[in-house]
Image (cartoon, rainbow, N blue to C red; front, side):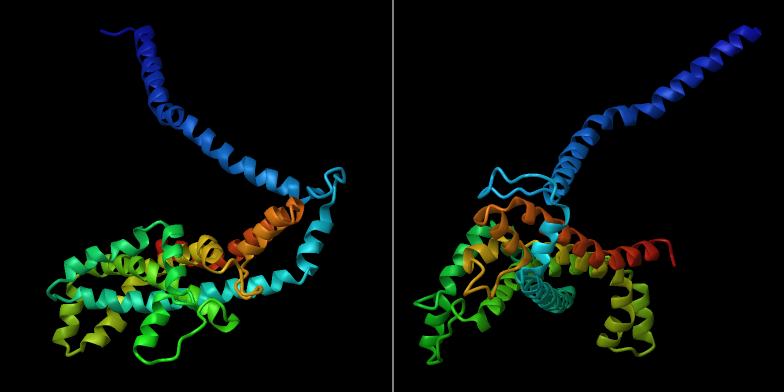
Length: 307
């Protein structure tokens, strides 16, 4: 027969074990949380500090609080709107083309055709390559003077093109490179979503006489909307931050025909040595990303909650 004192002691031990069990995950995750917070928060607040101060290495002794001037110089400099336009064109056009091509290829591979699995494996290669190495290869292919694409056009008796030397063709050429590299990624993601769809809705639609494309638009696309939103979100952010392809192939040229926000940021920081303006531009870019991704995040959360 247990005494009241023994019961109280057992209850305390039970509460102690419960506290240890509840706190164990927090204790084990605390080091990595602290490291990730330091690696994320310190650069962010350092960037905010630089954006509010005069940090021009060409004038190292002129330092101090400079809150509005860095942002005014970035916004009124004339290069921001041009770089924003180039970035917007690149993101929107490349994203639309990749979604359309990736969706069509995914639908083709969704069918029971011979060699579909082998082709799906081959699709991994383009986006598995190092971006700089891939950009160097495309730089040789797009070279107006003896590049691979112009050699093919000349062999076919067609006029050659100034792929990267013409302001009108430089940006489309870079879009072509990105589409070639990342359409397979979109294809594999959408194909995985198609394979995971239940068969019952398609069988019911087939019984009712619905054709293939009607089943795709009325059943497959609505079911794939959350996955498509995720693809748009991740590919949009990735396209927005693209730098290596532009830097290696065109360097922002000819002139400033392919100068994106990332190229402008690089020029301000490492060519003009004006870290204050570069930090201000980085914050402007962060605001742009938040404003563009917020509607997508809201739709994803709403679909998750069933609204």
